Amino acid sequence: MKLVQGRLIHGRYRLDARLAQGGMGEVWKGWDIQLNRPVAIKALRSDITNAEGKLRRLRAEAHNSANLAHPNIAALFEYYEHDGIGFLIMEYVPSKSLADLYHDHPGGLDPLQLLPILIQTARGLFVAHSHGVVHRDVKPANIMVGSNGDVKITDFGVSYSTNQEQITQDGMVVGTAQYISPEQAQGEQATPQSDIYSLGVVAYEGISGHRPFTGATPVDIAAAHVNDTVPPLPDSVDFQLREFIMSMLAKDPRDRPADALVVSRTLARIERRLLDQQTELNEATIVSGRMPRRISSTPHLPSIITPTSTTHNLWKEQQ
Image (tube, rainbow, N blue to C red; front, side, top):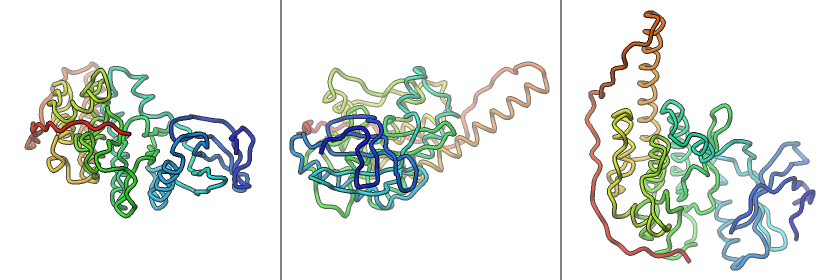
């Protein structure tokens, strides 16, 4: 079957416009002619190598997404196969990705703009983790942000579920090098703490305007996640916020926050405090008629110590 504009899939979904094309397949904006609503259609291309293996991965994505009903996760409506091609019918999210926002703000986002995005992402991840699903590829491009501020996590294409058959080989590296956790970079099984680390990288980039590690190749970057100490965030960043982000980036998963719910609640408390400070600043400005001298102070909370343990396992390339 050739995927062309105007073709009807499953007698119900019309292909309207190709949005993206990659190694796994194509993503289309479509139209559900029965319910009169836009949909996103992810289709496995028929001309790829190892089509059966990738079709199994698409089935796994459908399986892992099926029960994840949450406002911060893009919904799966249906999975369908025809002539060896798999189709994921999903919620269409007409939003910019967080990667787009980072591109538009190269110096980093204001914390009060970034925190609601991180909080909602953590909530969505907690629901996925509660269903035994680890995303394994948390990055700005997979976090959609609507004009109203609503967040949707997308692309569970390399996700892992505790109750599914093994798809990847032991030692195979899964994830994106710039955001990969140290354990994933060493070919170990990802856990919810792996997603928390990746979200920590997303937070670090959003606050500072750059990622914690760079390198000439993806292998070099992934090795840095394993071996190198995370560079400190600028002192201008709120003390508690930068300490908590650094705790998310702990090398040892056991030293990271206990779960994504802890992440969302902690970031929400930081957000409320920063909002209160902003309100006080605005009120003082109105009363005095001029901007007061800004005084920064650290909260009277115990600091979170980021471990500096170093591991030296060899990188194993994904086949």
